[in-house]
Length: 303
Ligand code: EPU
Image (cartoon, rainbow, N blue to C red; front, top):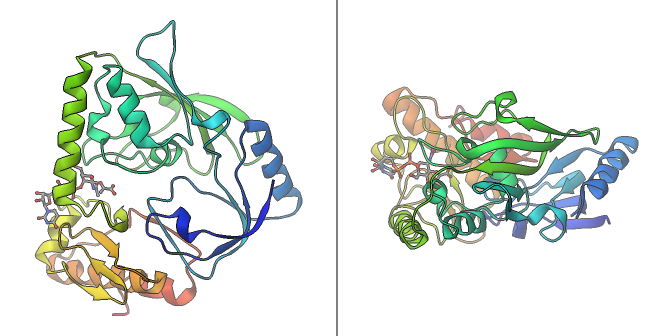
C-alpha cells in the first residue's frame, strides 16, 4: 500500500517539487483509517494531497507520508440520489471539472460559475474554491469527514464555516459531500454557459500553462490581479518563473522553475503592491516543505 520516494512534481499543476519519502493512495475509508493509524503509531508526519492545483512544493521533499485519495474506488463517485432529485453525493477524489459537467448535463444550475477551475472535489471543499463571489460551499448540504484519529462523521453545513476561500474543515479529511441544487433548466443552455465561461477564462488566465492558479487572495482593497497589474508586476521574471502577462495574479512555470524562483517572485510581487498601495497580500496557494531560505524570501521583507 505504501510507495517509497515518490516524486510529487508531476502531481502538481505547477510541476515543481521534491519527493515524498512515503506515498499512498487509499481506495476506501477503511484503508485510509489504517494509514492514519499506522502514521500515528510510527510517529510519521502526514499530509493530504488533493488535485495539486493550488500548491507550491519545495524541492527539499518530505520525510513523512503523503496521502492522495485514489481516483478509483470509493472516493470518486458523482451520483444523484434516485429518490431525491437535486441531491448529489460526490466523492472527494472526483475531479471538480467532471462534477461541474455532470451536474450541468443533468440540468441543475449553480455550478456553471465553477467551470474551468481545476483540482479535486476534496481540495475544492477544503478551500471553498470558486470565483470572487461564489464558492462550492454555497451548494454543500453536508460533508463526511475523517479526523486524524480515523473517526468518520458527517457534519451539516451549519457546523462548517464557508466563506471566501475558507471552509472550516481544518485538518480533517473530506471524504464525501452531499450537494443540493434546487433549480433546473435546459441542460444545453447550461453547457453553453459553461463553454462561454471557460472561453472567457482562457482569454484572461493562462490556463494552458503550468501554474497554481491565483497566487494571492483578493484583499478588501480590490482584486489582487488589478493591484499587481497596476504595480507593474506583469512579466516580472525569476529563473523559470514569470508573472503572467494575461493575469498578474498568476505565476507561470516557463519550464524548469524552482520553488526558490517562485518564492522569490512572490516576495517581489508582495513588495511591489506594498510599496505602491500599502496593501499586504495574503497567499491563496498553499506551500509545502519550503526550506528556510525560500520561506524567508516569500514575505517580500528582505527584497
Ligand atoms: N485585472 C487586471 N489585471 C490583471 C488581472 C485582473 O486589471 O492582470 C482586473 C480585471 O480586469 C477585473 C478585476 O481585476 O476588473 C478582477 O479580475 P478577474 O475577473 O480575473 O477576477 P479575479 O478576482 O482576479 C477571481 C478568482 C479566480 C477566478 C475568477 C473568476 C480570486 C483570488 N481569484 O479572480 O480564482 O477564476 O475570479 O471570475 O478570488 C483561483 O482561485 O486560483 C482563481 C484563479
